[in-house]
Amino acid sequence: MAKKGGKSFFSLSTLLASFFGAAMIAGAFAYFNYKFSEYKFINFKDFAYYEQNNIFQPKKQEYIVVFYSSREKGTMNKLAHLNLNLPILAIDYYNKVRANTKTTTFLRSGTNTSLKFIQRFNIYNSPSLFFIKKVKDSLYKQDSMIRKLDNLDELEERKL
Figure 1: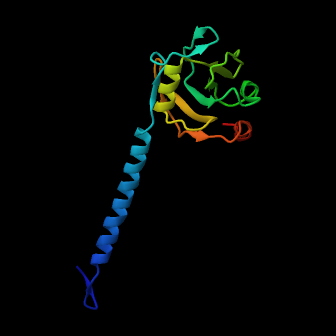
Figure 2 (figure 1 turned 90 degrees about the horizontal axis):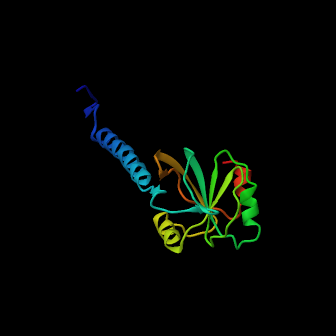
Figure 3 (figure 1 turned 60 degrees about the vertical axis):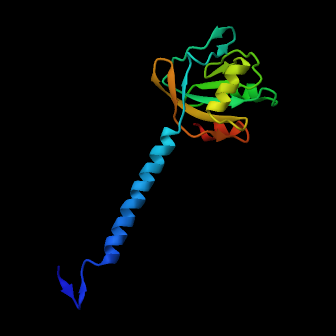
C-alpha cells in the first residue's frame, strides 16, 4: 500500500464505510423481498363468490379488487360507472345483488367466505382496494398494498 504522510491510503474508515454501504443495500433488498412475500394469494376455487346467481370464474389476467359497503349512499352506482384501465371486482360487505356492468363485476359471498377474505388480506377500512394478478388457472396473487380510499371519486381521478 502506498503511504502518504504516515497514513495508509486504504484506511479503516473507508473499509467501514464500504461495509455499512453494502449492509444497507442488502438490508433494503431483504426488506423489499419480505414485503413482496407478504402479499397474499386468492384461489377462486376455494373462495366461492357469486355474480347474481352464477359462481364467479375469473377470466382476466389482472383485476382491481374493491372491498366496499353498499350501505354507503351511491357507492354501488359509482362503482358501476367507473371507467378504469383494469376490470373491477367489487366485493360488497353486505352482499347486495347488483347487475354487472362492462367494467365492474359485483360479487357477493357467504359470511364465512367474507370473513376469510377480510382476515387474509387484513382489510380494516371500507372502501379499500388492491390489485391482483393471475398466477395460474383461478389462482391470483395480490400485486399491490391495500389502499384505503376516503371516497370512490379518488379512483376515477387517479385513473388506475
